[in-house]
Length: 70
Image (cartoon, rainbow, N blue to C red):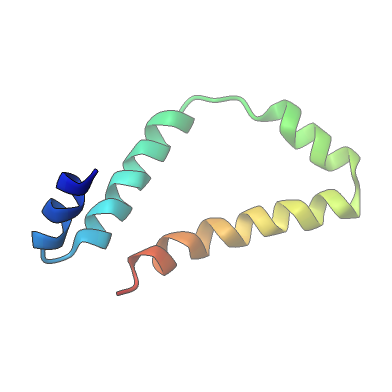
């Protein structure tokens, strides 16, 4: 772990590379997945489900830029 930490400090933009890596990893993990049951569960919760889904939506758009900030 210490070796990786030292290697990342030598890079000019280490957080940007980590961000791109996590985006690629997320795409690989979630492509082709069926989230129908999760969608149905949130829909059954009514307004609470919509609130939770909105939190996921907002987090998805703000987590990546916040991580890349230096």
